[in-house]
Amino acid sequence: MKDIYIIMNRQNILNYYGSKLDLKLDSSELYDYQLTTNEVDYDTDVLDLTTPITYSALTIDSSCLTTPLNDQKPWVVPVDSRYTGDTCDFTVRRRTEKGWTLDFIFNRDEVNWSGGTVFYYIGVDGDNIYTNYLDNNLSFQFTNDGRVKWVAYHYSGYCALTGYTETHSLLYGQTPVLCVTGNTSDFNLTIVFNRYRELIGCDLDNVGGFNDLILGPHAVSYTDELWAPTTGDTGSFFSGSFIGHSTQIATGYTITNTLEDWVTGGTITTEYVEELNKKWAEQRDMRLGDLKFYLNGNLIYTETNWEEIIPSYRDEQTLIQSWGGGYNYTYFGNTSKTCGFNIKSALYYEEPLDFVHVRHNFITRLGDYDFEICGDDCQDDVFSVNDGHITDEDGGILLGDNDTHLIYNG
Image (cartoon, rainbow, N blue to C red):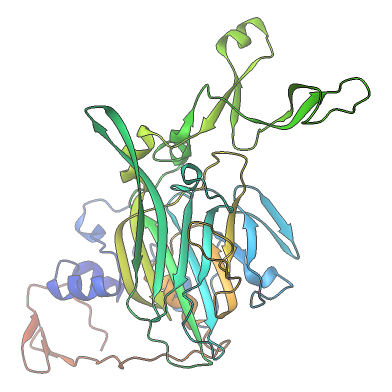
């Protein structure tokens, strides 16, 4: 089938059906020089429909938790720092080379869609200061009518006569109504973000990444006020004299010495803080890609030109992923602690899986879950080979004599 697809990739029929299957065209056989051969330039593991593929990019697998995800508390893990608990040991990176994949297996358990509660969130933890919240939040939730909705507050700006003006907006979208009918059945929901531009090395941080947020020198606040006590007093806010703070906020700040300090050997440091700015807004195109939704291994919706969320430190904050509950996100006004469905499995890959691998993931787990797949059955078209032509059931010619490299498989 791959040989057929390679040789015929410019045929209208395969361009049409290939796009429906979310496949990529391969024109390598039209070139004079080919780096790889047909025998090894595809993943042969997808041919085994009984064995799950082991992905090096699989970062989180909920099976490592001893506490099931379907209790009434969301599972919260840190971003950009190591997580160890139960049998889990991983670090969720702030940004990956190409994108990411979320894979859930939900069970309705006789629960309806009402409530529209969040089942996944990434960003700042419980911060309602909008300058910290912008471009620092993303949630996926179910709607009352059975769709998947995404919500994010984004930062932007433009140059006006008075100078650079900052703005922000609430961006959201939703899938069609999910075809899930069984009140106690399982269903597999996979969400994939695939950035248009793959980045490696230092480009990952600098090309539309969080290094665009670093400004300085910038005032850095302190915690734990210190007061010098008066006679007979131990020192407090109401008496004595203020003498400063005890600790400097270091989390999220890049602290370096000035050039003069390096030359003179001084110890004074300059603080640089991550802050939304004009450069960040201008490099939005470097963060765009496709957001794809799959239900039971089938692509159901694609959002193009979707902007990825890259968690960043703006203050003394914690960056988190939250699975299976609304958590208390002030901007959404959502204090729910459950998404309304049991989560039997949750997987997080630090790479975007394509259609073939999403489908393979689903097929290899058919025997482990009670999937109910609704919708109309696929209607197979009938084709035949007549005098070197491929014709449909009405005799119309689909492929002609000039397709000499076509390989027929019966």
